[in-house]
Image (cartoon, rainbow, N blue to C red; front, top):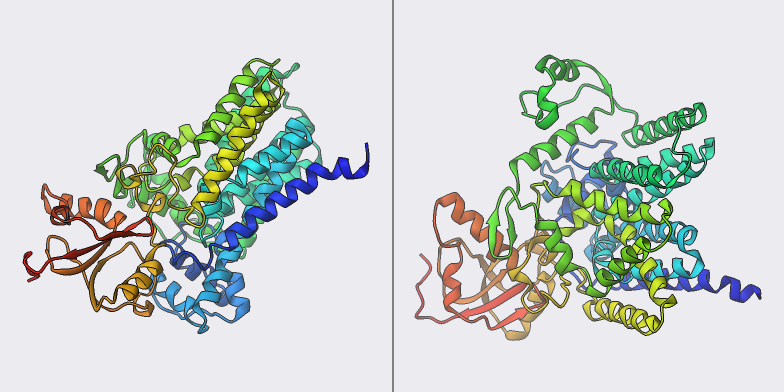
Length: 552
């Protein structure tokens, strides 16, 4: 076999990754600043510029540093505002070239897309061979959800890459426990944890699931040998010091009260109050971690306004994420993943092949009771794992009689799903929900403020001189190229031009109704009118005739 033929799979995988990166980069100037980019940039810039991390400990600093490094090197700086939302906007405008600074912030997330793709290549190559790895990379780089969150300055792609690397490192450690693999496992755990606190939970349940299938498949089963104990101790030490270094080796007491703040719940509720108060008084390494986990726990207990299938809730639904997977994932990908699972059941049991599916299922199960039902992005870490499962389905079809045509058709279908979604990967829905996605999900699954710039251009084209707005946008609206405008207040009908985005029309409107004890959503009066058009996929533009009720 010639060298060119042997290298063909690797070269094709590199081409696929570069193609995915080009598509991601091309979205940077196409979509407006999204909701969570603002505070992430504020926190990361404070870490770099002020050597502090006080704006929001609820996420670890890695992804925030990555998205702020480019703007910092370009000349953007912290502005010292007390509010992280205003600070993030001020940082973006501090250089004078807002678009360039935002693009450089988004470039920081691209590194995590590349890391995830590389990890999928190496892991699936061990499982499925060279061409199976090509299939896995193709599947990953054509998932709209992955492309969407690889193109904005947020934390979700960082934890996705970190969890994938940590779980792959664990499979390598299971195969042979030596010092190098122990150290790499520690770095992987640190990577996943520093991406987002949920990364540690995903790694823990993924490790438990993969250990279970290892025990089912290996003979003799896993034994706790001195070598394994020593290398796992090394992994924990490497993870600990790697994480601590990103908190600048800080040492002190936590700032958030654990007991009075109501942290204990579930099994932790049985821990005596004295233990919590002792932790509060004891100086600890990186106390910001416990503060951040405390804040995340408080947010989850308090819930968040969420929308699903026409209903509103602050505590969520156990079936939110299964529904989101069903309508936000390309159907071709789901079919290939199902084929991959079925094919695995028909082979002699190999724990290596079952490990990605088991870990993905564990991540889904542990997220079912979560009350923060505001986006499938919370489960983004599943999708590199599912890409390998689906790649196994591709190979199974390829080997079956008349299966090649089906495999090719499904791969083409997936490719076209991503191609037609470009550059609006954030608002992608599959054929089940594509016609009216707002009837299924909103928030970061559909409307995260990304169409705001399109609205500005459209209003200018229409010659609109005044508009009432209620948009899911956290950028500095004073910098937008808008005509004269006023906010659209709840339960206050107006006349003239009105623009409202789906998250505000659905979740916010229902949240206001619940708070005020009203049966009708805050903007139900708009239902009497037909919108003039839909701007992008997320904003409805109305022209309310003059004989409608006047604004007080």
